[in-house]
Image (cartoon, rainbow, N blue to C red; front, top):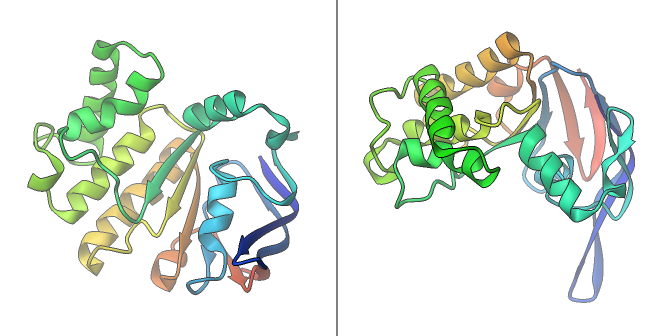
Length: 223
């Protein structure tokens, strides 16, 4: 489903080249749930952003079902990203002026789905993640775990084939974080959604289908 070949990413800072990714090769099959494990600065988030087409590699290819997506125009890339990929970040990035239902509806409205259809889809998903009684609450009225569950619901509304999660439990205590983990792993199993999780949390990584170790911009192990 996803294949990267000799993927490199270099940043320029103060006139100096910083190699963040140093020629990665990786394949991820449909329905897999790999964890990308490594310490801060290993290149995990940079890799996830490239997998999500939020950033471009310096060189190398990212293929989705055999097509190098970075050959596409920015418009087509954005359409692919909005329809095929759901994102869950460490910081939920909910819009504070909107309630849970409205935040969940947002990607559907951006994709020209009618307000009524978007509302119906959002209500179903919020019930699925256990927030049926919190739909009219704004982010400031929700706990950290509830906010992250809204973020998961928002990632699901376009029925993506891939969910990319960057430290999804990083700001949560262990008990609350486990609830979010349970939701993500259940979605992977019941909907066959490909789930890629970036983390430095070994307990979370152990719940995934395999572990891909990343260190100094290189893959050093895959379990």
